[in-house]
Image (cartoon, rainbow, N blue to C red; front, side):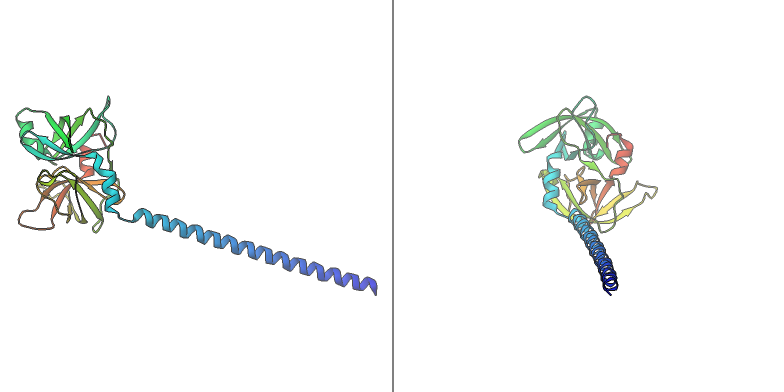
Length: 241
């Protein structure tokens, strides 16, 4: 009788131990699942934070690399981009039409201006067809990063420049469309951020603080239609991005 009772108790204890083990495993799996869900939520929160469009933060990061450019009597905007120039200094982009008169007359020196500072720069080369000019200065400035992904309609952007000579001006808007080359001109980015004479050559920046285009024109007799040279077009023409 005692032997039978002992065996029954051992059987019960073994069964209880098994159930406790299963409970522990279930709880561990539950914790693991909860941890996985938490990690996923944290990752999504980080992605959303990165995607949050903050013009003030973008402007703060970009403005030190953007200048009013003076090319003889003409003024526009230029910005440092990409890797440093060979031998030091910085490479910059602006529009060809900003420096056209000076270039055609044989002049090559322009001046970069911001606040009370003035830096000489040289016109290295131009791309007349796509309205881009490559400048170089001995000054050391951080180059903005060129976007590698194509723009999308509705994408929020910031445009930085010197409209009417008013440096460090910032406007915001969205990409209206990407217009493919039509045989008469190259591809352009259409956007609705306000621009004016003097914005020419300024960077069009996405939410990741990357350059997506170079502001080049405002449609005449229309509001909310700005055009920019895609940054890829400029980067392909000059190996400085």
